[in-house]
Amino acid sequence: MEDLFFQFLSNTGFALVDYRQIIMLCVGIIFIYLGIAKHYEPLLLVPIGFGILMGNIPVVHGMGLSIYEEGSVLSYLYFGVTKGIYPPLIFMGIGAMTDFSTMLARPSLMLLGAAAQAGIFITFLGALVLGFSPGEAASIGIIGGADGPTAIFLTSKLAPKLIGPIAIAAYSYMALVPVIQPPIMKFLTTRKERLIKMREPRKVSKKERIIFPILGLILSCLLAPAALPLLGMLFLGNLLKEATVTERLAETARNTVIDTVTILLGITVGASTQGDIFITKESIGIFVLGALSFAVATACGLLFAKGMNLFLKDKINPLIGAAGVSAVPDSARVVHTVAQQEDPTNYLLMHAMAPNISGVIGSAIGAGVLWSFLS
Amino acid sequence: MQIATLIERVSAHNGWNMALTGITIVFGCLVILALVISRIHKILDLLDNRDKIHLKIRKFFMGREKEKQVASLLTPALELEASRYRRLSPFLGETFSLKGLIRFAESRGITNPPPEKTIRQLLEVGLLKKDVRNLFTWSESPIK
Image (cartoon, rainbow over all chains, first blue to last red; front, side, top):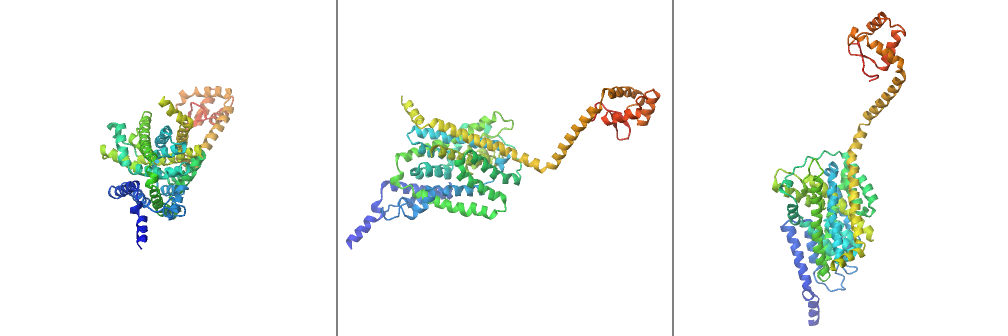
């Protein structure tokens, strides 16, 4: 009986715990705190934070409990991440939620979304310099797209062993958009520029909104076929929304599907960050490069907007360039908030949505391009 | 030396080319998409107003056809006749009736070719124009 008791004790988490797991348990608690108390992307940070707690409870290997053990429940749920199933489903939900009208009203603002993607490729170079393999470097670079599902999708294809740190970095930076972007925005723009008011966008007809997802899919996927899984689902979701006759499907895509997938994705990505696997020099490098990528992407969008103003009669507020990183709709909201701090009557939210949405398309194309180069 | 090694790491994996090509493709793709979607509403406008446009095109081609006909009718002989009749306008005023023009032409001895025939031809080529009061006036150019 004594032996049994000691055997039980040696199998408890208290006996098996490692300092790295304790660090990760603290990280998980911080995520949950940021989500609930600070409202930083709570829909993402709470499931991820809880997943980190689940993944870092020490368990005896061989009992089929860990996410990395074949046959465990978590490993089955994780299948959707490793095989790139969840990201396209999330894209469908995003498509069913998003109104592309502002982008259709002023397509020139799409260039800002394109410019911000330079951050992906600059960081890709930086990661190569630091000695990461091309697949890993591409997966790290895509963090600059500020698009969690895209980062997970590309990493699952090119560097599956880095999914945990890359997903955590991507979602952390997405959640920290209100903290990371404003200083860069203020540093790279003058007060006069931040005060620029933009004219109202024209009204976009229903026909236009229905034609766009069809045309968008054909054009972008003919040019970059590797972006098909992500963009195909994004445009499908948007068509379901705009067609109105498929309102029931759109409703399911933007509520039930995206919520279910977000929970599964959050929990499994969080659980994949087991201390012994997650806390490495590589992970720290990924976090540093990820932050750099995000900052460079923001700066590229801002500077491109300033460049556009040299040629435009009807000036644009360069702050909206920062929304070129995806992070829909958080970066657009941040742009709006920063503009309102200077002039409370300046409403930039609708204008910032155009580069924001084109950033989603741009980062998906960027991911597709990198995948096709390196697969 | 160290920088050269770092740059070599990128070159070894064809990194420069991949980055440059990648950003060019992303940019090009979004530029093309932007160009195409900026045309959607114009194409839709065209389709919505296709009856009006069809009418405009018809008018345009009919006008061209008429111009061609006029060009064939407006012979040098007719132009000479027109200048002879125009010289009568100081006596008739800016607007005049066709009867008055015929009578005045005959009184001035312009009878060959007969004034009725010449005036009909001048009306066909548009050198003579009818106004709202059913009177006639000279036009600067044929047809329009």
